[in-house]
Image (cartoon, rainbow, N blue to C red):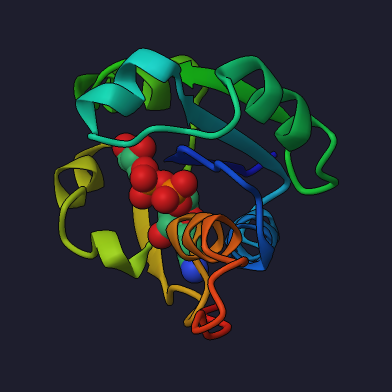
Length: 138
Ligand code: C2G
């Protein structure tokens, strides 16, 4: 069984996330997602709309995801790769090069990010939807 691992916040799930998860799953047979917990989000200067438990529940409902584990630190990836016997580490290419050190432990693949969509854009659009000048920003 080929095991794939990826990490992220996955707040306000959208088709860019699904596109990443789908392509990551296609690279193997089993997909593990390291989901940033609320404290780690603060370290990443991110504020999720949904809590960790809510984001976890939604990822576990996704057909491409086999296991969700908490992401608490930047440093846990090597230990996770060894613990979960991951063969492939996958991230969107906005992270290109940032995790090349993991090549000593598994294959590292950066997939093209889906253009035009992000949780930030969605949250901005929804919070400004009443503004008569807001353009569809997604
Ligand atoms: N992504 C994508 N296309 C988008 C938006 C996101 O391919 N339009 C990908 C990102 O590249 C990432 C994954 O979806 O691989 C999750 O994105 P985020 O939830 O924004 O995660 P991020 O904040 O990048 O956290 O240790 C790694 C970090 O936890 C990554």
